[in-house]
Image (tube, rainbow, N blue to C red):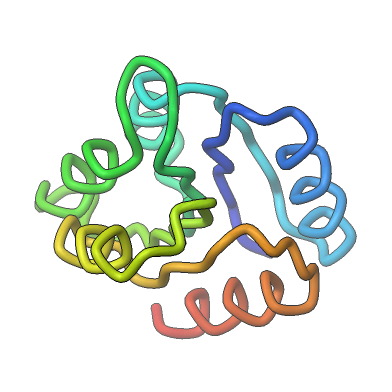
Length: 122
């Protein structure tokens, strides 16, 4: 069982991800804006963060950068899950420290596969 933080401003996405991840015995916490997500990540030290890019208060790129380039938190795996499908957005995601980047087609099997692979890399 892993601690997973979902940072997304869509209640529908959060509910879907919570259901899928909890059904696989993961402990799931949520935040609906970037600042809350960043603060919660630093407080609970999750094994993985599923992070949207387009968030209120602080975007996902900034959140990712602040986590991955801080020695204390850089071991937290980050899966960017976003509607931004362009190559430039994906490149920025990896440049800011994302471990994986997926678009929101919301296939539960693909999400679980990516989560499993990232958690095994620890």
